[in-house]
Length: 169
Image (cartoon, rainbow, N blue to C red):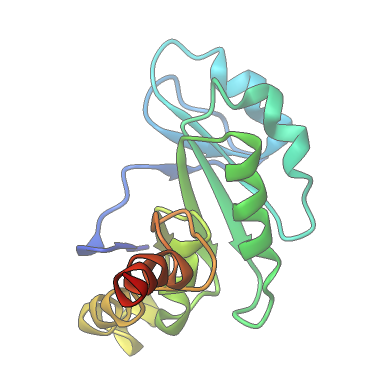
């Protein structure tokens, strides 16, 4: 499955490990929350986990120092809980990679970034229907917002203050 970020499509070096599959000794793996300790006990490789739309981000706080990635799963592009989870994870202090995984579309990409996601993992079928150019255009489409997002340091309101000062001076 391709990964999408502000530079386009990329391969994924992370491997999803199902609960009935053995965790490999090496390599970057994404495991369920129940298998975090098992994956961390391996001799080599980074560990990530998945957080479903009804998951509890606070339950991951004790693992923040050990987790390199959290993949927030979207079951439907119409389900916005993943956006809230991303904001909450960043507010709780998670500084690792944050991935939107599952059913997201290119129109949502600027909002994913504004909520703190680093990239999105999309299906090969979606990549065919919405090629890289669509995602790159979406990445450039919204550069300002009313909220101070994770991906931007200033908001529309922040930009207005210097202009207001110039007008009143």
